[in-house]
Image (cartoon, rainbow, N blue to C red; front, side):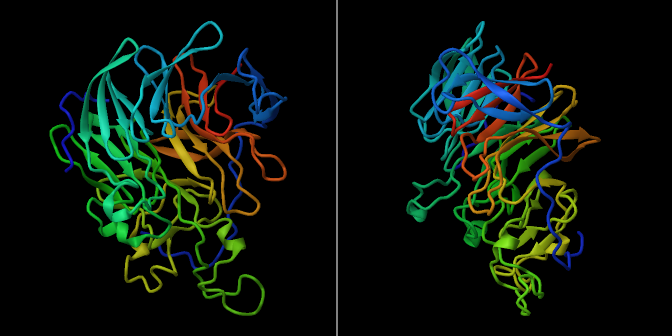
Amino acid sequence: MITTVGRAVTAAGLAVTAAFSPAPSAGTTPAALVPTIVRALPGTATAPFDRVRRLDAPPGWTVTVWARVPSARLLAWTPDRRLLVSRPEFGDVVALTPGRTSPTQRTLVSGLNKPHGLAFAGSTLYVAESDQVDAFTYRAGALSGRRVVVDDLPDDRSPELRGQYSHELKSVAVGPGGALYVSVGSTGNITAADRDARPERATILRATPGGRPTVFARGVRNGTGLAVAPDGAVWTAVNSRDQVAYPHDRDLDGDGRSDRGAVLQQYVNDHPFEPLARLTQGRDLGWPYCNPDPGPGYTRRPFVRDVQTNPDGAKLDCAMLPPVEQGVGAHSAPLGLSFASGVGNLGPGALLGLHGSWNRQPPRAPEVSFFAWRGGTLGPQQTLLTGFQQPDGSRWGRPVMAVTGPDDAVYVSDDKADAIYRVTAR
């Protein structure tokens, strides 16, 4: 059963593109980035920081290993200025209390089932486990009054899935009027049955105080990035599908034959891109029948039919789907999304952690991206922090999420380097 959200919450169609165009590369930069030595505070200089590490950052910015937190994932600041870090692998949430140099670290809550998303509404902390969303009362570094506000979410323990769930981690956000938004990922790459499951998967759920959760948006393959914008709109950053086939009746590889339906690395490398979408009630992001199609940039791009799952358009009319507001390169693997009133001298915008690709050649590099907030929407991707990937494609770090702190610094979680970075602008 899915329960209602507790009342204690406070307010907090274009035509299909006819031809293949090469997709743009990674984001532009807010200014020419420069190599910056990653400084390690005392007690943080174990691997991978037992040697000099450099990241590319805006001129004058500093990057410091602020804390070491194994398997650090999503982040949220408490009302009393402590940074919370979720750790699905350990089933807990860690609290970091800033000190004169390094923060003190302790476990805030443990014994949870793969906790991932974190969100505050006043003194209420919401924690998204893989099978439910909990609400706690937060006060002075302690939690009390745990209650389950959304339950029966599917995960790898759901009997019908028999342990097969590729995207079981959940994210949570709090919108106007105390509405809760919960991302429920797909069970696989192109598991179309998710759209008919009960409860549906590959969705964003919405639950209002005193009401039952309902599907707010569907066709969202894995909307791990989930956040509420300054105007109250809900945005999601989505991991699109893998190994997509070439959808056009053209010769792409130069052998003189049509490549429609063929899975070709040169097409897979840049298709489909990862959407960054503003959600409205009933919006459909197309998965697994329609894919966002890149062009000269990722702004307001239309959808194209998936030739493997929707070859004749009978499953879903892709031309009727609203264009995607914004996006990043295919296989960037966007994870944590947050909005900030200001980032250095860049003004207001969104921060997005990109984990980097697993199936692209050459690999898509991890980075922290910034998107300027302009007139109720987001501008194009700008690379803010990069350099986690070596020239041979190996990586020493993979950012997950970036948030601004009460001191105006940017704090970044990294679940490969097991670190929290503090990034400051001069």
